[in-house]
Amino acid sequence: HVSAAGGVENAVLNAAAIGANAFTLFLKSQRKWEGPSLSSSIRLFKERMQEYGYEPKHVLLHGNYLINLGNPDAAKRAKSYECFVNDLRQCEALGLKYSFVP
Image (tube, rainbow, N blue to C red; front, side):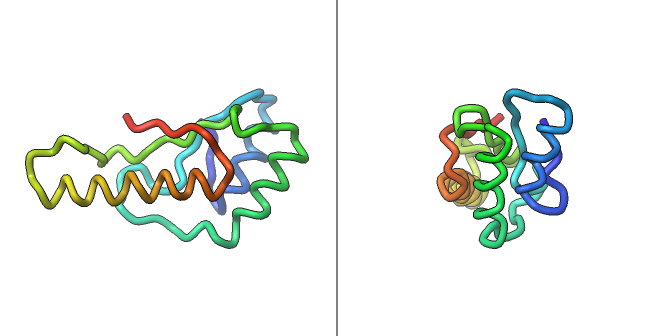
């Protein structure tokens, strides 16, 4: 895991700083349903990925710890699904291929 504090684009810099050849990151707090918009970070994230030689296959988006798609409570299950879909959309917007939900 590398930190994405200050913007998802910083995860690339943090990975490069430790010599990582691959990395995983959270796009938002792993214990909150909502997160910041990535719209202002997408372009810079992709530019830094290219600049530092990372390909989408080198990055794993780590899903939110709150997601439970099998939750018996319908409201919590719906919120989990919404959060999961949002993570997948952000993964796609960043040009990433892989997402992991614990």
